[in-house]
Each structure stands twice: as structure tokens, then as C-alpha cells.
Amino acid sequence: MKLILASSSPRRAEVLRDAGIAFEVYAPQVEEARHHNEATEKMVARLAEAKARAVAESFGEKNHAIVIGADTAVELDGEIFGKPRDAEDAREMLSYLSGRTHYVLTGIYVLRLPDGATRSAVERTAVTFAPLDPSEIEAYVTSGEPFGKAGGYAIQGRAGRYIPRIEGCYFNVVGLPLARLHALLGDMGWREDGQA
Image 1 (cartoon, one colour):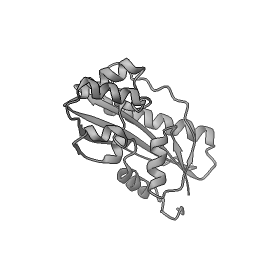
Image 2: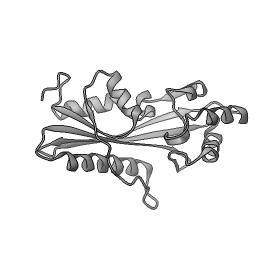
Image 3: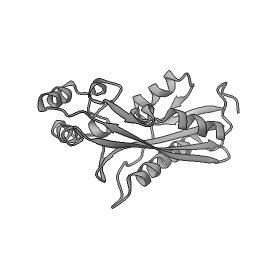
Image 4: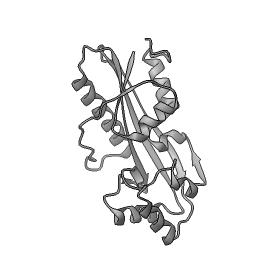
């Protein structure tokens, strides 16, 4: 059975590709806004489902496929850190995360077509940043890496040098908790050989 990744994230695609999983990509058209007082866990779960359903709808319900939706957010002290709007926003995010432990939450929602069966989960990983001095933050922002990434950093890139410890799934921090997704796909009858 064909897998469809409902995401425009090159990092999520890379996680699946590196794991040897065949898939197709369809970018969902979903407004990624937080509802008033919405908990981070509820937000990422809701957006992951919305992305999967949007792509399933455009893909056609008569097709045989499994659609994967995912959404990732960074949380610290109850505040959600999305993708930085600009360089100043990235500097502020990194200053706030500096020397502290924050949480990365990814909602995943798996929808099987044509029968509409679903599975979902939210993965949570604790990420500890070393203290960063202003020159390190400036150099990192200037590199361009913070942009387009929740929390303004990429653990698999230059930011990895500032992260001495994580507790939980590494791939969750990249944007797609691979082991959890693999288990959900197995629950849906998907097999590595693409058969179902």
C-alpha cells in the first residue's frame, strides 16, 4: 500500500527516505494557527489530523493509500515557539532556549484510504541547550539555519553542537518520530515491502 506524506517539510521527507521507506509527498493547505489557550499537545494533534485529512480529500478517497500527517512545536514555560518570523525573532527564541531544557512535541495522524481507519499519537522529547553567548546566537542566525524550523533551530544541523542532551526520540526533534510512526503503520496493516 502506498504511503503519502502530507507535509512540505524536507526534514520529514529525509527521515522517511533515510529509513528506506518509499512514499510520495503532497503538501497540505492548512492554516497552522493556535487556538486561544490551546495546549501544545492538542494543537499538534489537531494540525497533524487536519494535514492528513486535507491531503486525503484532494488525493481521493477511492485510492488505496495511507496518508501521514505531522505537526511539530517547541514548548517552554507554556509558551509555543513556532518558526521564527525574522532574524530578530530567531535571536529572541534562541536566547530564551539558551541554557534551558524545552520540549518538542510532534503530533502524527495516520489515515488509511479507502476505509478511513486512523491511528494517532503525540511524541514528546526533552531537549537541553547549552548556554549560548550572543556571538554564538548571532553566528547561528546569520547561517540561515533557524528559518523554517520550529523553535528556530535544527538539531541535525549546526545547532547540534549546542545540544548536550535529549531525553526521548531524536527523530521527533527533527520533525517525525520514526519508531512511533513505524508502530502506527504496522497497526494499520502496512508492511515494509509496501504490501498490506
